[in-house]
Image (cartoon, rainbow, N blue to C red):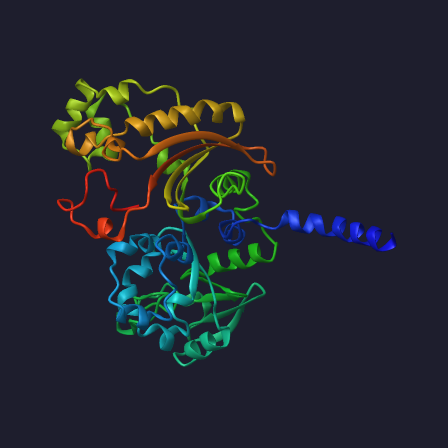
Length: 402
């Protein structure tokens, strides 16, 4: 009996700690992003390499060199392209990375990127050997340092010199800055590196990591959004990638009564003549739009749920009532969305994919009290042959890209 009572007491003490654990790596990385105007001012991008591999049943490559030797199809690994801008250079970096930065490309598990260029800040989560990383960087003139109490490695000219461009110093294997020759400083946290050319951003990350300042995980809107697209009650698969979109980027008011007012935002998609047509003869799918309450924050996410790819759109609201109005309206807009601005064709885009389904629901966070309107487009995973096919070769309705 005493043993049973002791076990119950131990469980009671353990439960609060368990309840506070994050259920998603996305939430873990958001806890490192400072809640300030810089992080809120641009898109936040999240990518999970291991989820990509699991989705396409690709064993984790031993190394970048082994991956290149296997002559991989980049088209079939399109989901990797959502990683930070540095990774667009990855094919040219993989062989040199271990010697230059002290880790392999496939040591990286996940990334989260915030802040607009040229101050792009990347959180790299992975299986890192910090001693090897320090040795590789010290061989290139970097020095061990500390930024607001967190260990760091900084260039020879100091932690505040990361913005200095030096084309003569460009190194092919330098994942932190492969194109401008900057000596980008970075924090070295357990299983996590944080690189940024701007010292002030690394200081803010260091403060957030130690609980000395608020992070986006502490913010009610960002936390609700992250919970909504990773909710274990709704999903059993993996979050492959996500874009968290600040309201200012997606809530530009469009006046469809004046073609000139549409030019700043839609001129890249349509000619002035096409915009005049849009004003004088709007397509039915716009005329049929209902009310979509103004939202605080938005996300577009890519999930893998078994054999299904799931595109998720989520909008954050202060109240469940607004989210209940928004969810079916957003679903209806997605079902009727077309390429009208590009092609003048108002055929719904999803009609090309007859196996796709659209569902809507509302998520309310117990932690924040905010709600999210969620719409999911589910469609089957294409075969490797379908995803590698040219448009003429692909079978009708087979989505080649996530």
